[in-house]
Image 1 (cartoon, rainbow, N blue to C red):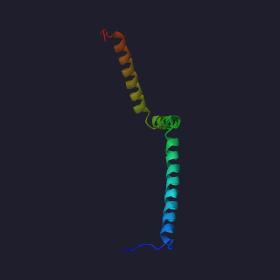
Image 2 (cartoon, rainbow, N blue to C red):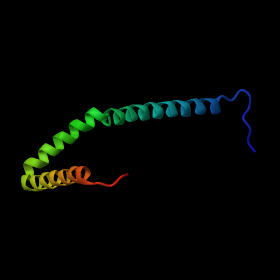
Image 3 (tube, helix red, strand yellow):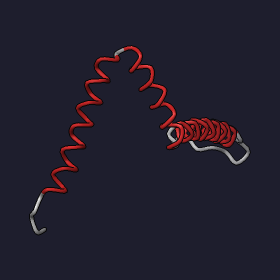
Image 4 (cartoon, helix red, strand yellow):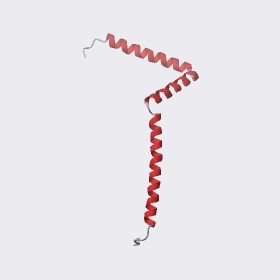
Length: 89
């Protein structure tokens, strides 16, 4: 078993180099996590969705029209059912 002598500073230098590498990796991770958090903020997600929906609606107007009509019919049906339903719960 090899042991380091008291005057041998090589293990400490290697440890400090590894600590610098870990610190650098943590800093890079923090930057990446901050960027992910910024992109997932509710206001930004809403803007991205609105942009995507407008782009898709221009590319496929018939599909979006059919989907909009179906969603409108569903909502009218649900509200009508809620108004007409005479159950006591």
